[in-house]
Length: 427
Image (tube, rainbow, N blue to C red):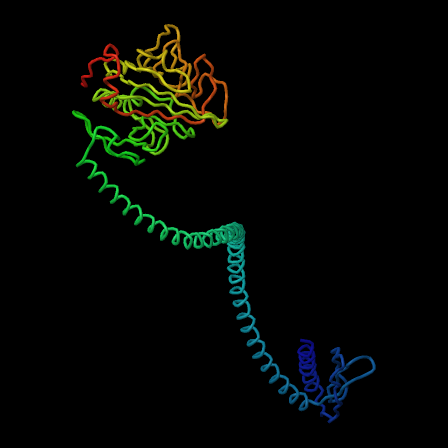
């Protein structure tokens, strides 16, 4: 711009010099001085008396230029002015483009700012979501640890189960052998029962000294199994109707249980009052009671005529016959008494149920001197609820006891007084 001003000053000075020259009609002198390129030009044109134009640069320097030189110089600078004008126009276009671009950049910047705000919002949302996911991942990792621990435990259990399975397989093979053995025994027992059925008897007498379970068939009554005792101090052919040895069976039961019977024939059991009634009424029977105490002492009580009544008669103890033995005649006071249980009170007491008091079931009177169906104790105690057999109301518990019956022989029947017999008509 400074350069352009210098040119403009020179042109003005040149024009004024031409006017002065034309008025004075002087000739131009070819005096020309080189203008320094970096000099600061202050235009001050005067009209010297000579024909040459003078340009005062400052108070010390004066440039004298002829008209022709000035025209040449003017042409040069006019060309430069034209070039600069074109350059200025290009620059203006460029500036306009830059301004347009600037507006576009502003719009882009605004869009960028909006996008930045959206991204910031989304970033906050994603940060919260990622935090939530991290928490869930931690929870899942914790669960994975728990499941891994459980899996290890399950694997240990599985290992143990596999070992157990191997052991069980061996045990199964063993049991298969046992099953085959018991099937064989069952077939043998079945054959024995079929043989017993075909040769059914009314007592154990035909089986002699064979201590086995046999089938008994009484007239008018379904066949049933009984344990036959052939090797006793009283001889062979006895039928066991009650046994107490270890307390494995609960004997404190109701009337229906004592009527039908319960327990195991090869262990503790009660044959059942209905069966006992049918057996003793089918033919005359005798009763043998074997007793063992905890100190090892053994004794017995034998009654040569044993008979009980029907259910309608309360399974009354009708006959005992003569007593023989060394255990005392502790059943004598129960003669002619009905059977009692905790739910069927048939004793002689009016203010007390003897079956409840003695925790058993028996032919109670006031209440009893024997209680063979009482509570079993695994040691000797003096308790009215125990299994006892005493003549003077002592309650020393017994270690084991067994009641046996056997049909009487005809010779024995002839020796008995006829007054002691009553008709036996089974219902």
